Image 1 (tube, helix red, strand yellow):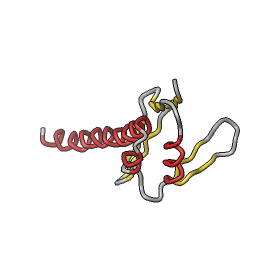
Image 2 (tube, rainbow, N blue to C red):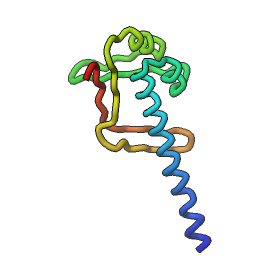
Image 3 (cartoon, rainbow, N blue to C red):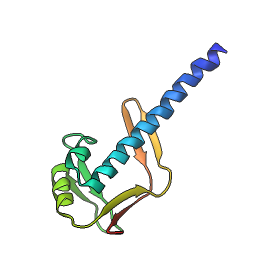
Image 4 (spheres, one colour):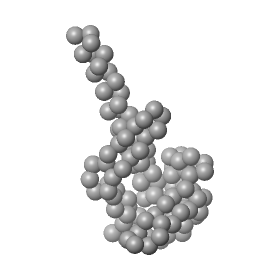
Length: 107
C-alpha cells in the first residue's frame, strides 16, 4: 500500500500542475476580455512575445508592450476561449499548454 500511495502522489501533483498551467492561460484570456493590461502582463515574462499564424501568411510577432497597446485600442467585445480541452506538457518548471481556441471580436 505504501508503494501505491508513493506512486499516486506525483500523479496528483502533475494533475494539479496541469490545472495551474491552464489557469494561467485562462487568466490571460480573462485579461483580454477585460482589457486589463496588468492582468495579462502578470501571466507573462517581462520580455514575452506574442506570435500569430494566420492561414498561409507569414507568422507575425509583437512584444508584450506592443500587444497590450493594440488590445487597449480595440473597440467592441473581445472573447478568447478554448474550443476543446487543452493538452498540457510539463517538464521541470516549464509547462506548455496547447489547444484549439477561438478569438472573437464582437461575437
